[in-house]
Amino acid sequence: MKLRFQITKEKEIRFISHLEYVRTIGRAIRRAKLPAAYSQGFNPHMKYSLASALGVGVVSYAEFVELELAEPVNPLAAAEAFMKALPRGIRVLAVDAVETNAPALMSVAGGAEYRVTIPWTWDIASAVDDFNRAETVMFEKQAPKAKEKVKKIDVKFYISNLSAIQREHETELHFHCRITHNGSMKAVDLLNALNEHYGLQIPVEKADIERLDLYRVDELGNKWPMLDSLFEQG
Image (cartoon, rainbow, N blue to C red; front, side, top):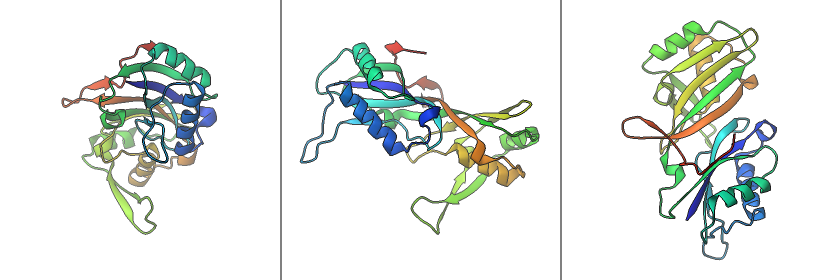
């Protein structure tokens, strides 16, 4: 049996690393006394994982933890115990249970929804229109762990459409980003690409980035929730 939890990473902890976030979840699982399964060998590890890594500084309401169990439990009782064991900044929003041999959540995540709020009010309408009409928008970034190499990204492969709402003191961008088995694209890279291609001066370092949803995508492009929720909390 595997439990799947939808949890948050809220503003007060958004600057902790992904590794520390994962460790915090592991400590909470132990505090909640959930009967986690462990790997075999001289250095056994608890069998739990996250569906998709989140960048440092990004807030999320759609993180998903998958925990393999050594014995069955009541999912609702487990969610309550887990929620009480989590620190401030992480909440349980939903839970479901699947068979141990069910595909890993990491393998089924197909897309994510983002909102980016920037204290910046330049007219962005024409740039958004140009981006949405473009077939390709190429962007180069330094490749991880390779100081002198760059990675070329076709932004449009990951983000097909962008919308913007401008208010008196801020601009809000909204988009969906594809997730593939080879990876995805960071919201901050989209902002840098917009600056580079359309002559904008978005203050990227001041952007408030939120992941609103993570979902599955079927062969027809239809979006489906990651969980068949047994428990939900607003």
